Image (cartoon, rainbow, N blue to C red; front, side, top):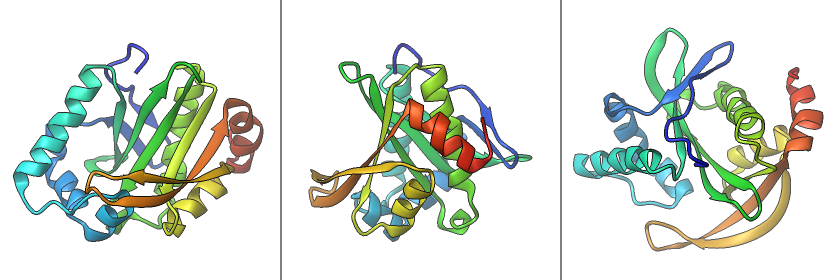
Length: 192
């Protein structure tokens, strides 16, 4: 992504975001085999270990190629994967990218993602100099939509997209500009 092949380590009060590693396998497999996560992300739950190995290798290879940046979310003091954030689909013509994110079910509804996403957003705007970030989520993924609206993302469109499982998924596209991040989102969160 813009010539960067490994994301920097980012930290907040409770969390540490670091590059994905093969050692994250057990928790990544748990996440990728969860039926609710799979449904909301448009893939078939993984039942075979090989699919998770291929997924991790694909994410690592994509980072090596500079196609995306992938962070494993961990709690400070516990170097165990609890979720992920990916910055991908960079479009140089628009100078924007897309955020993707997920958390293990046992770590949802603890405010972790509303703490982690702004770290990646700040990095995208300040270090990568992006102008806008998009986040697409399923139309019926109300917790994700609530999160994006809490962070002051703006709804821009309903979209339909073919997902990895071959099904067409109805989604909503949200956007956050660099200016809005620093003038609206950060003050809401008590930041910059």
